[in-house]
Length: 418
Image: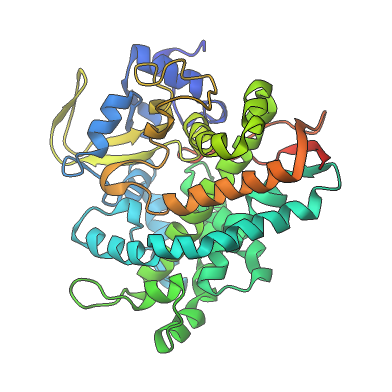
């Protein structure tokens, strides 16, 4: 990387496309680095990130997205809020942006909705859905895996638990893509306003569904979310419900799985030795492969925190109110924690200590569901086809731009039917 250190920024689309060289450089030269264009301190070492994630009182998540928007372009941010206010509902804070008194009550609702017993009940459905999706293409010898498996599997799983007709999954995908595009912080003002109108459309789509569930609960995840009580006895306001539905259930519950599945296929195509080892004993190695692929590619590259007081991080003193860009993906490739961190090794003993799902108070509440979706996707794929390989001349391996998420646009593969 020839960029001068003071010119490096994670707003650069090419760094977003391949951030791993930047992570390695910053770990060596500036592990707590001020990214001037984004007005944030970028943290890349595993131990520093663990310190941040386990100290929510000092490193707060409350409202970090709006803080970032206001820091970069306060006029635009105010304009966007007014559009929400006049046409729909101003989004409330997602789970990842709360660590106030509201977080405990809201998280309890999600813990109940995504409790272990419900995930176990869902397991056969997820497995069969993966098998059915693979069956549609396994005799053709080729597919674009993002659209044929990585996107529909988690969306079908969520839609089945929320009461959305399965024929609407691509409509839901359009809305979640719009949310992710806005979350990326990489849009022009005109593009951002388009995504805001998309989100407002999503808000109105669910208004009648939510009202029906409030009148007649049916035991689905959305029914639990709508009707379970907060510690003070209140139920959630509609703005809260629709925010959690879009950001925490649909985006949070699908993007991680989608991105991990597509990147995992790419890893296998690029690591023939690891692919062969995996296939030599799928039952033994598949759970280990899931963790190692999450570590290497980190579907969520990072999140933000805001300091509540002056604090020392490594050799750097951060002021109160500092915006901190916590790079999970950098921690997952830190040579101080993972030996030969850039290598894929499905026998790695400490892959499970990765931070792909965060840690501490804000550890991803949907991680158990995501792991099952990823597991059953690969179980169905690897039992259904052989000799996975990249389709020659069809891939550019580009990712959607974004500060926080990493997602392949397309991945064309070929294979031999079983």
